[in-house]
Length: 324
Image (cartoon, rainbow, N blue to C red; front, side, top):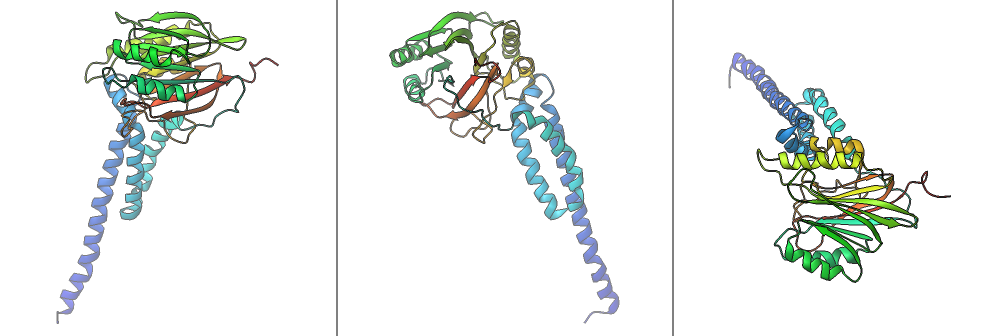
């Protein structure tokens, strides 16, 4: 048997070790929380940092949730320190949480859009699936000569009205009143604008295939997004839908000017509407924006073998703008 002095030493050493372990846990959790706070703030910074931060923003929230659970188990006293990154993340993500759709109407317009991945050979399958959705307008991006040809053949009967330029194309069941190619600051066309006749009025539809983003190379994409925002700012149309592959997450600073002109369409299916990569979507880089319209529903669907999911959006004239 040990002496009283030995027993006393053991009794006091154990709580000290426990307190030391909890302190280390608290420090690591606090450091991780501050790192995640910096990651959230990055989503507001311009350039490559902002683009990466915006793409990671939803997943930063998941990490914050996990960290909060760990803190509740191992070091409750640091939970208060996590309130700052959680609050900042909520403010950053709030405009992009899922939303509710408006009431359905007989004069609704459904627009589907997908990047069909050039040289994949899947344009026909994508076109068939998108047509089967019953959409009024089908927009395709990243078209090459072969995929454009098969898309035209596949959609010709059900969508007799069409227009294509560069890497983008659009097909409509409804009459197309005007067409316009858009280079948006590049030397060749990767976007277009048409007017679709919807009842007694018309809706301007923009389709964009933004330039790709690579480390240190996103000036072309930013120029296109800024050019699109400027084009729409000068557009007198009361009703506008803009769809396509923007190569930018919803919170990307590169979309700030466009968000000032149009309303970003929130998914109404209870998800964040991730579209890429199709096998396991991690980010939403295919966007939908509107002006002068109410969103009835907004979701995504798989079509063909593209690495992008398609966006499916149904809109209708706003009640205040509708004819009596």
